[in-house]
Structures are given as structure tokens and as C-alpha cells.
Image (cartoon, rainbow, N blue to C red; front, side):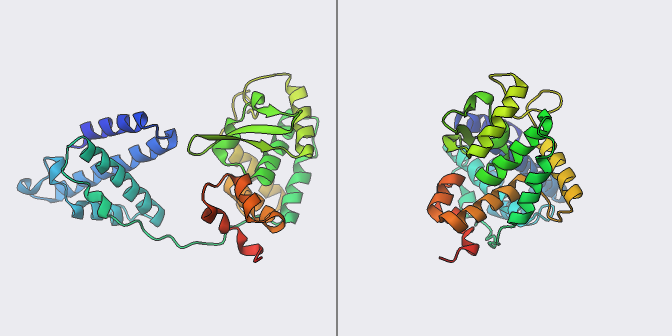
Length: 283
């Protein structure tokens, strides 16, 4: 019943310049909604089955958001966002009279203190990846750890960096961030020296900066393997992932530089997003 609307909705999202990841999330959630409706129809009598998008009620939306497959609070939040976007599309194209999804409240997610690596744990990782400085992949791993722990880059940002995005003369790197934003970041001098040595071994002037064993752009799965192996060898109990390194960079930077500089480095558009790292810097 929703199939033709879903395909039109996803085309609309592409034209509206939604990011690839946002479209993937919208596609997954809206297909879940269709499955939920089909499931509920199977439990209804034929006379009560939904035959038009106009017959979908607010109660159907509430049941999907709160009950379908016992969703976590983050899934519920994603479902509310998806339904609001979908019904905005439906009202815009006059498939329905009003956006009933606007009445859906976003679930309140309790704020938690971000986990982070201590200085000792991070230094142990640096020493671990500094042992084989003549090997291309070992240098790559060291660059990854330093980019994440010093600049707090996100996964997608890290993976997308190209060789031509790095200016070692000026000590700058051009990055692409969430929301299609782009900006320059200053590279620490120590990191510039390591990247210079890495590029000398690579002998290339363009292409992805961080590559896999197959000479392709590094993947998120490869990052997970690197982190898992390092954590096992060093006995670090915390699960290593790019978000943990971002929290680490933000926490320790905020302790010495304050909120304003931390906000600039992380690229937060809202100050409130940076304030959660103020737990170790009460001033």
C-alpha cells in the first residue's frame, strides 16, 4: 500500500539533498513502518484493513513508534523523525490533508557522561603503533590513532580524507563533515612528520590517504579490526571505536583549552553539544 509513496519519498529526499546516510536511515525506517502496517492488517478483519494512506491514523503511528519489535529509545527517536519527514512529503504533494506525525513527541534521552580514554591508555596505544615505523600499514594505523585522538574526527570524515586534502607545508587537512560541511583543520607538527614519512613510502600524490591491504580506501570494518587487535594486546577493557576517540580528544582538549576551542575543533554548530565534555573542567 505504501510502496509507491516510499519510492517517491526517497526520490524527494535525494532532490532535497539529504545525505546518503540519512536516506539509508529513512529507507530502513519507512520500510519498517510498512511492515508494521501489514502486520496490523493481518490481525484485522477485511473490512477494517487499510486500503489508502489517508486511512492511517495517529494511533497507527504511535503503535509503530512505541511498540513494533520493542524498539530502543534511539530507534523510537529515529522513527519519529522518519514519520515527520514522510508525512511532510505526503502533505506537500497533497496525498494527505495534514501532517499528523507532528503530534508525535521525541522521546527524552537521558544525558550520560561520555566515556573516554585516560592519558595513560592513549599513550599506550601511541607507543604500540609506533613500534614498526618502517611498515606502511603500521604507519597508517599510527596516523589513524593520532587523527582520531588529537582531532576527534568522525568515522566518515576519517575515511573520506584524500592525499590531496593534506597540506604538510602549511600543516592543514581539508575535511568533509556530517551535514555536507567542509573545513580546514590544523595538523600537529608531530603528525605532519609521520604523514610525510607515510606518503614517501606510498609514492602517490592523489587518492585515498588511508588504504587497506588491497590498496583500496579503508573501511569501517578494517578500523574495528585494528581497534580490537590493539585492545586485546594492550589489555584495554574499554571497547575501542571512533566515538570513544572523539570523546577522548574532546575531554582532554576541554581541560586545557576550554569550551570555545573544543567546539571549534569538533566542528559543533551548537554549543550545547560541546558542553557535555565539561565534566572534568568545572571552570
